[in-house]
Amino acid sequence: MAAKAPWLGFLFLVSLWGLSAPALLLRRLREHIQKFQESSSLNPGFGLSQGFMDVPKQGWLEQPLDPFNTSDRRTFLQRYWVNDRHRAGQDAPVFLHIGGEGSLGPGSVMAGHPVALAPAWGALVISLEHRFYGLSMPSGGLDMAQLRYLSSRNALADVASARQVLSRLLNVSSSSPWICFGGSYAGSLATWTRLKFPHLVFAAVASSAPLSAVLDFYAYNEVVARSLTQVAIGGSLECLAAVSAAFAEVERLLRAGPAAQAVLREELGACGSLDLKEDQGELLGALQALVGGTVQYDGQAGAPLRVRQLCGLLLGDSGNRSHSTPYLGLRRAVQIVLRSMGQRCLSFSRAETVAQLRATEAQVSGVGDRQWLYQTCTEFGFYVTCESPHCPFSQLPALPSQLDLCEQVFGLSASSVAQAVAQTNSYYGGQTPRATQVLYVNGDTDPWQVLSVTQDLGPSEPALLIPSASHCFDMAPMRPSDSPSLRLGRQKIFQQLQVWLKDTKKNQD
Image 1 (cartoon, rainbow, N blue to C red):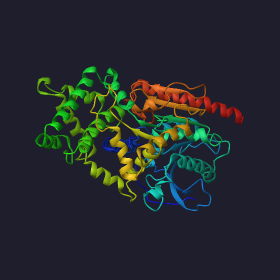
Image 2 (tube, one colour):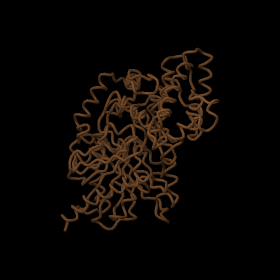
Image 3 (cartoon, helix red, strand yellow):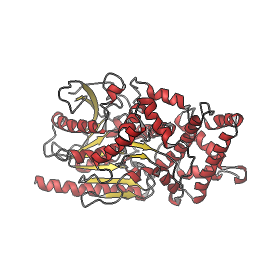
Image 4 (tube, helix red, strand yellow):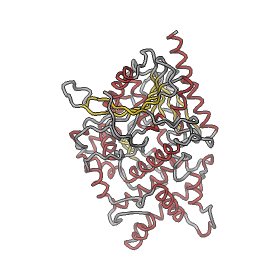
């Protein structure tokens, strides 16, 4: 079913953390970057062909709310976008950009690497918004009775259904190869679509895909620490030491009593009391996310800070080092990020966070905080901690505090979350999914690479690790400032698709 609705929204490839303060900040950071990139994509000099200013076609599909229960007749409308500007004919390939845990806007078919690849093969480009995010929202709100229909398995069923319905609606030949693209969680969905529906999807490109669910994601901060020492992106051992010193000073001030805590609230944008340990954990987690987010999105258009800039601030490179400290540098970094994102607060009280996540009204803004928390509690975990000896941050917020959110918001116990994570890996295969004709792409500074595939699993399961590249960087619109390693990485993606599509062309002939 095709229908119409208001044109709204940006492409949000949001952060994946569970929804404590660090994750909320990372989600806002990713939304900010994606808004910037989409608005910039309207400029012909930013990754688009000259003159391509047309708004892509928006459509709606009627999908079953419960795709595995034919007796349940309830449905919802799922949004999709179409760019047929480069389409060479009915037999041309179809590049399907799968949406993840956020709103999917027209930029998903206007700019970025899948779109840049389309002219070479005359491909039709389609994107599909994920159920329960953006405007693809079932009626009835976001209470537990509704959220039970939000899962990666149901999302895959939506992709399979959309692939079949859109073939008819858009007059796609049965011989046209469909290739799925996705970044982050959507990269996992692209992999799993090929795994579960190989008769419908010819191949997939999975960028920065965290294929392995994990309860305690302490390895995230191990990669952050390692990346902060990478000279190629402006890091150093001195920078890593300065991060540790800055966090030690924040913790010292938190222990120093109400007066020092009041100063911290003012200087670091903590818009809530710091009396309780859980509220202190919210601030420390948000600061951790600021540093981690700088690494995760290093070098991307719209990112408030690069690693090189952050290290310069922490080490006092912009002025006289004798009058600077790592803590002052961290303060400046907070100010830059908040100003760039148009936010007043870096963190809120734990009680405010819980209250926000308990709200069951669907948010038209498409942010999806409550929905993603539900998916982490029922499928993925992804709770970033600082329990490794190599972590440069505070031990707070600890894993129990993050798991408590599942209990406080949804009534789900920590043991049920652990069991859900294990079931996800059992169902999909973790980092060995055995899906053929999937290309796994990662950046070596991205903390999420440790949950993905970074080495070839076999001849038809190649992996590409791009030096000095951050999260989903290969999917971003191309820029003149892109590094040689990123350009080479994109060229290798092109070459791999060329090999696979040549094979299908031979079979057609």
